Image (cartoon, rainbow, N blue to C red; front, side, top):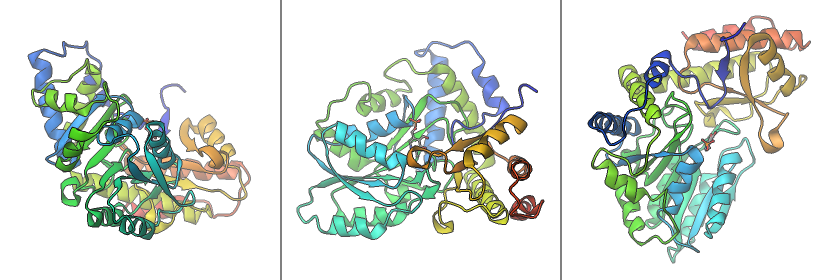
Length: 382
Ligand SMILES: Cc1ncc(COP(=O)(O)O)c(C=O)c1O
C-alpha cells in the first residue's frame, strides 16, 4: 500500500499535515511586508524554543552548514580548539576545524560511550596561557544515541574563562531541555529536519555576546556564512540572501504548534519515548549501545545479538514500510537506530515496537516472550 511510509530515523523526521499544508503555497517575495512579518514571528519563536535572548540566526543550510558557521565566525587560523569526538558528528567537527586550519586537540571516547568530562577539565586547567579559544561538543551524538554531559563540560569551559563553548544541538534542540541563557552557551547550532518538525534546508545558530566579541577579531574566511550579515538583517526582519521561503512557512507553522504544546510537554514526550524504546529493547533481549545515564532523547541505538541489524531494518521496511536508521562508519551493519525525535507520538512508539516484535519472530529470533516489548513500552507510556 502506498502513502503509509513511517519515518522513524533521527532526521529527516516526520512532518505534520498542518506544516505540509503551510508549505504547499506559492512563494512570496522575500522583501515583502508579508514575509517580514513571518520572519519577525519566526525569530521571536526561535528565541523561545532556544530559551535565549541571543540572536538565533537561520541560514539556508543543513546542520553541518550551521555548525561550520558556528565555528568559522569566531576563530582565526591556528587557534587552539578542543573537539569532543565520540561518534560520527564529533569527528566531523574535528574535520571542519582542521579544514579551516585550526589547531585541533581531540578528546575522544569510544563510540557508544559518553565523553569523559574530567578529560575536559584537565585539558582546560592545564592551559594557563589561555590559548584554547573554543571547545566544540556534540550534545546528542546521533550516530550512537549518546547524550553527552554538556552541563559539566560547560562548567569546565566557564572556569577556563577564555574559551567559547560551541555546541552541536542538532538532535537535542527541541527534544531536551537546553536553557541556553541559563547555561551561558556561547554558540549553539541546529538543523530544521530534526526536532523542528519541518523538512531539511534550514540551519540555526544562536550566538551570545561573548561570541559576538570574538567575531570582531576572528579572521577565518567567511562570506555566505558570515553571521554578522544575518544578524544585521534579522534586526530588520529580513535575511541577507534569498531564504527558502516555503521552509519559513513551514517553520512558522511548526513553531506555533510547538508553542501550543509547550516546552515542558515536548521534553517530557521525548523522555517518555526514550524510556519506552529502551524498556522495550531490554524486554526483547536487545542490547542498547548507549548507557541509561547518557541516553539521547532523540534516538535509541540497538546492537542486536543473534539477529542481523540489517535484516531487521530490511524486514521492517518491506513488511511494515517503517524506515529505521542503520549504523554509520564502523557501526554499519552492527546497529540499528530508532529515531523518536520531533513529530512522534505514543502511538508511533507502540507501532514500532509491535512491528519490531513481529519482525524478530519472522527472523527466527526467539529470545523474548511475544508481547513483552509492547508491554514494557506501554508501561512507560502510562
Ligand atoms: C548530531 C548531528 N550533528 C550534525 C548533523 C549534520 O546535519 P546535516 O546532515 O543536516 O548536515 C546531524 C545529522 O544527522 C546530527 O545528527
